[in-house]
Structures are given as structure tokens and as C-alpha cells.
Image (tube, rainbow, N blue to C red; front, side):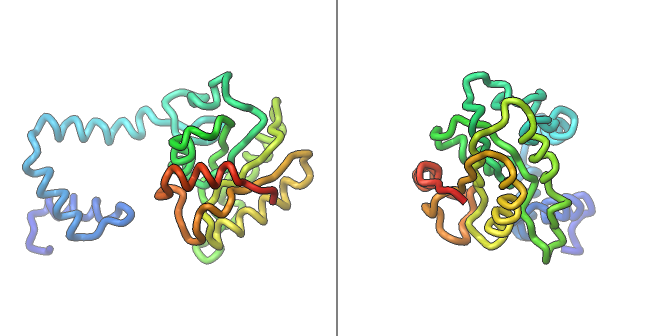
Length: 200
């Protein structure tokens, strides 16, 4: 790709940084954009700018939002006795799409991965404890992590921290196969996992 014009090469390099996107797909994206009308490209560029200009974090659940608190945390009809702890905002959205959960959320910001250098101090463990001490305090914590070694490690670590609180601690049932990712699970599987959650 060294013979590509510099603007094409630069944009291909940016697309290559996206997860799951390789050089061929990146080049396909760029050629598509070259055929796109200029006014649509300007709208695309504006959408990219707005990601950092308008999106902030919810001070309660730590998800991405336009307003703080987010629409879920601000909704008085949500069940404040249940707090579902997820790794990333996209997992929160996957659970919301099932329509089966009406509690609140907390986004941890990742999972413990010592090999990758992601230790508990790099995640929102302290913020979760602060959330536990707010009123009204949750009566149930649901760990909704990917059913893999990182998810299990994080579950065990958090369970030890939260044992001092008078709460029920559960995790999603094994409707999710080991190694699966919440983001890609279908709604029926996620619904079964939520309904069949068990104590940790």
C-alpha cells in the first residue's frame, strides 16, 4: 500500500486501528468514502467531532451519555434495588435490548486481565464501592460479564470486595456458552441468562 496517495494511506491507517478491521476492509471503506457525496462526508466528519464534544460520562453508572445523569439513572420507574455490573457500555445496551431488566447499571470499564496489564486499580472498583454507599443502596448486585476466564476472575475479585455489604450477589446463568461475548449474544439467550441468574 506504499504506492497509495498520502490522504488515502493516512485514512487506511486510521481505519486499521479499529477493532476487527484489517487492511483490505480499511481500503474498501476509503474507496467507498471517495464515492460518497461531499455533503455526506461533512455530516460524517461532524458526527465524529460530536463524539468528544457532546458525549460525557454518567456520574452514577459511568456509561456514555449526553446528559448527566443518563436517561436510565434518571428514570424514576427503574428498579433501584438491582444494580447490574457490566464491563463496557455496549454490554449494558445488549441487556437493555432484551427488555427483561428494569434495574440500574454500573459500567466497570473492562475486566481484570493481568497479562494485558489491566489490574483492579485500573478499573472502576472504587467508584463501584462509592455507588454502594449512595442512597438508595442496591439490594442485589448482578455480575453480567463475558463467561470466560477474565469474567470469572473479575467476578471472584468483586465478590470478595462486596461481601461486606448486606446484599444478594448474583451472576448471569449459563445460558451463555463459555467464551461467548455479551455484545454478540442473541436476545433470547441473554433473557434466559438474566432470568436464570444465580448467587455468587
